[in-house]
Image (tube, rainbow, N blue to C red):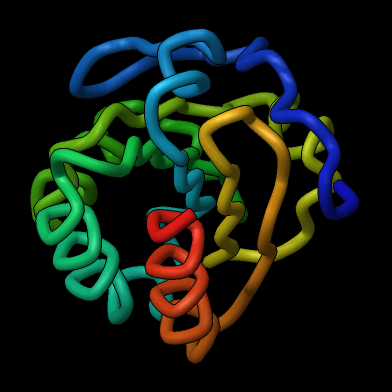
Length: 146
């Protein structure tokens, strides 16, 4: 995805955890952070407490959606995704992308990866990797201040 492109529709889930959302649920009143992660990704597990802290800090002003993208064959087992999400403290909705349909729509290649959309649904920031979340936190503050 390129900056300022609109958030795509959230199609292709093979399952959901913690409730189901649509694009229209995420666009309009608040910015949205969509983060891609995988049950087999150690960096994802290491950074998840920081994602959760950001989610909790901005609970009233930011929509957060987790997208689970399988990196290994075992990652396609919904029970593994559920168990990993529970252990990681993920309480936001989780789009299970077992067939990588949303991952492909976003043209995402990395886990973890973070996509920040403004309240109109336009992509304002993208970051990936272990240190990417600190940049995302700054951009969240900027977008919330607009």
